[in-house]
Length: 244
Image 1 (cartoon, helix red, strand yellow):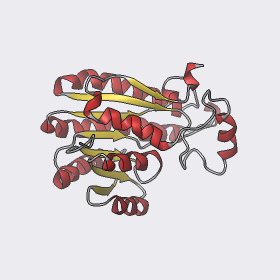
Image 2 (cartoon, rainbow, N blue to C red):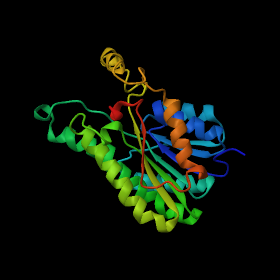
Image 3 (cartoon, rainbow, N blue to C red):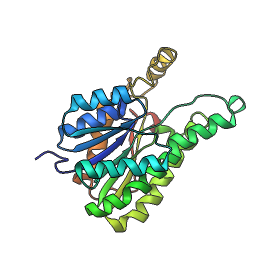
Image 4 (cartoon, rainbow, N blue to C red):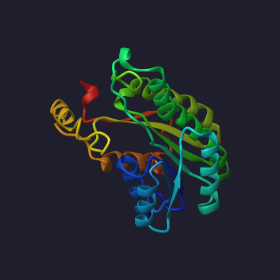
């Protein structure tokens, strides 16, 4: 039997990169998946490629009304939601003195507030489903220092995950965070950063970047009933970086 047979999932930031990888893996394992992203063209095309068990919805993850609409559309198309993967996020690598308040607030809205909104919106649907799994994508920088703004928000995701896990345990909803290291996604290997990232990869104990599929395998495990006793925990996929 497929590992996500009969489950309905929402995955944000799913038009490309890790989100797309998660969506593909979920479909392969029997889930019905709602993919959301701001990139409507890529998202629609990818959902069509995945087939009838995929639905794309354009979403601004910082909008509470947008989240309400996504959950409602997911229920209308497939039924109550069992799985939420809060994957959408952005990076920022600027010194404190060069970071504007507007830039700081933007990354907080996208990386942190969106996770709160997603959990708040989906919990009633999961209660109707009789339980569920929320997987919040943080980062290795939710465990160790990195750039201002990005690090702050990824630590916040880790903290929200633990708080939500305790609150949601009574509902049969598990909440865990995933902490990827350097992953070979379009956002990471942009032309202006590719050389620096490849050089940094040499310092990783496993001597390489991870592929998105390797993160997807962890997300799949947490979404499935195989992880039935895991909640409020961090799952690290960084090739040994934070073990040094």
